[in-house]
Image (tube, rainbow, N blue to C red; front, side, top):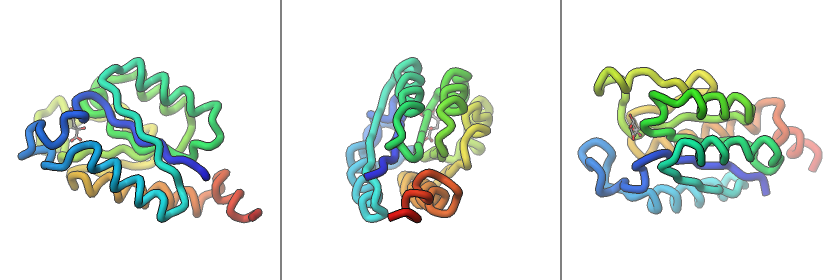
Length: 159
Ligand code: DQA
């Protein structure tokens, strides 16, 4: 079964307790559980990875380069969105279709959150819809994989 990789960056392990008025009351395990079921409904396995460390995120993205089972990436780089050239370069190097998610609308918050270094190397971004954004990203990624000239689309054609 082809896999989708969900990557969450720093402090997202605190979801549910962290500034719930901004990030909502759902925990990360709640979100991952729901997303895993949704991925299965579309015929994909969800692999999830959370780290507070930039280098670990860079390494995990880099590993996908040699892993043909990973069809695409859903990523919330959290604070690294606004600072990390390394994560941007890793996403570009991996060359897997990626969708960026932000729970909050980063454009109505502090100015330093308005810029995303990682968005330009992603297919698109879903911003400001809370945890529902992850579900929309999953749907968007699956749609992209099934309609583009990707390995998944080609595999589907031949079975
Ligand atoms: C976030 C927005 C970032 O600015 C922030 O640093 C986060 C979470 C979001 O999901 O809204 O940690 O990525």
